[in-house]
Length: 267
Image (tube, rainbow, N blue to C red; front, side, top):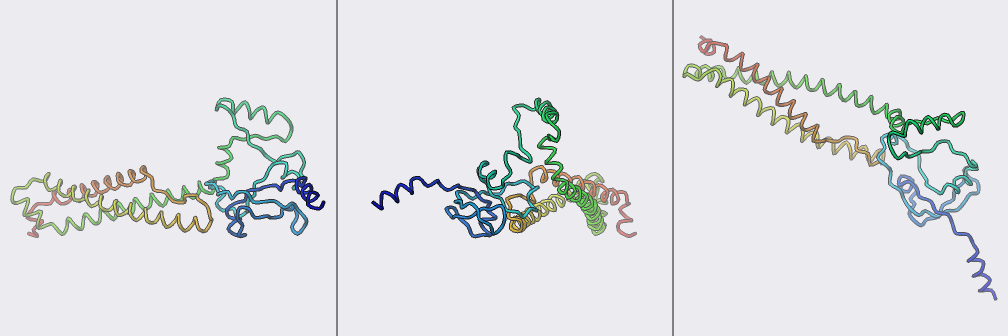
């Protein structure tokens, strides 16, 4: 008579609730799928025993990078019971079928009752990403300074190389080589030098990007890409390098071909 009674009690027992936890919480607390944990609204008080059914990966939202809190996903009724918050919410998201109905929906929500305030999701994203906008402007300023400094450095290198070839250019000019040919050779050399420099710069940037992503993804434990090199960035870098190299070659060659050949020989 004992065995049937125990079986009946087991069948009448309510199933345990399941939750999903953040991968950061799983790593720090050494939890895995199938473990049982206790949830309570106040620490060190009795709560509900639940089963971990899934471990959720973190999203790629930049606004969540610096946040160190843990996340737990559960059913809405379970959350209401646990938090004792009743049928109330602080905020909720609404999806519209078309872009044209967003403004109308926002107006209807804001006029429904006092205290309701609706915002576009992209406006909220912009508001929470102000820090990243400041960092982006700072990076642009550094980029402009770097480009100007590299242009001056490239011009100095071309002037030094031209000064070293004074006698060679003078000999070519006395042999009948035209100024246009001399200028063309200097410009081609400057363009090749700029291409080699841009290739080295892209390689260094790619390695630096790999290191930055490896380090900060480990620090913040997030899949967000902190540094990326896109085809548009590579195209911009190569184009700027060529323009600066050709400009430096033209300025250096003009200074060279305008000087008489005998003066280049030092006579």
